[in-house]
Image (cartoon, rainbow, N blue to C red):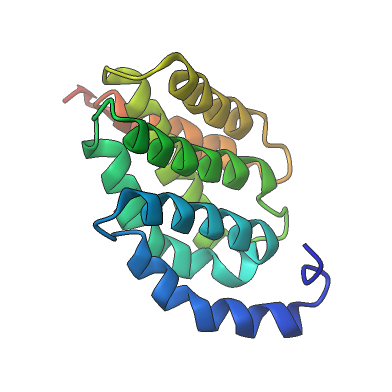
Length: 169
């Protein structure tokens, strides 16, 4: 966006809207949740480094809960899952190489685990399935920070129930 090269302007604005925006992710109205996910994606695209720890602590829990629990075939539920998956894909492909490992690896692990879990649990539409695969492909192809690929393997192992050194749970 226009403010991306101006973090001294963008970051205070992101800080101001973050709390109310995160509350909208849990709104009763699915249309509001969809739009909130779209705005979170936009902010994360433009201020990833500034918002990464906040995202993981406050925005990701309601988003991942939706991906894990809402299996409704309704159009709004599909739109909400699609918006969250678009955010996941954006995070997987736009992680800046200079991001701090403390924030980057947990985000990639969480995003990867959610995408992998979605592929294991029906019912998903073909479009949702392809979006989840796209997230995993983007994480697997990430070259900027090698530990992203390690995070993807950890996420996949968790999603299929494998613990390190102990086989299947």
